[in-house]
Length: 287
Image (cartoon, rainbow, N blue to C red; front, side, top):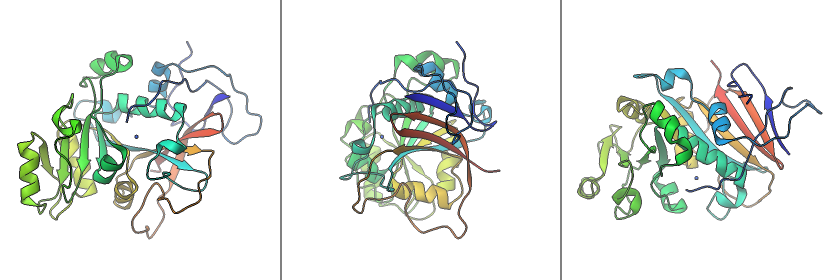
């Protein structure tokens, strides 16, 4: 079953007419309220255009010189695991991957931590015909840039992510990062962006530095430590969370790590999709 439950007035209008992910269909138009048993739903598949409308960035981020909007895209099992055997794929699904591709197709930049790059085998974002016209009309390049956040710069700069991207990969670090590693990155043609006064990049500075380069539609795919830093610094605007109908047990990380907040950050549910037991939620920061 594929259903969409409109939840709040933040839900974009529904048209009436983590890595390369699949093109399995997802989504459907519906009326009703999330969480209400028996809420009516029309079971029809959504096109990529309809998904793109449903997940569109706010107009303030899309406007020239607009404000940055940082959204995260993560997946979690029912018992809170963000991965299984070190990777997110085992708890994902074809529909989850299709939404993953849609979110990438809308973004100016994908922000990711170095550990996730190593574990997930990140490659450059690719141009997709389905989003070409939309990106051109929005003044975007053919694919989002990838921005890797790292303090140690312990990365293999011979990987395609750095040597053969369609859009140059950025490396975000701090002013006190190892000078020899900064040099190696620059020798490999990687643009190093200083976004912190210490060894590592600072969350608010990451958002600001990317926005200063015109990359206002920002998407982070984690990992948990990086997402935890964005949450702790109060700069995360939106969370797109897939709840996977799986149980993993074990001691896998949650979607966000690091020190706990003194006061939990409150987000509001903006939209909810369901397919085959997978819940595709979208939450926005309150206020």
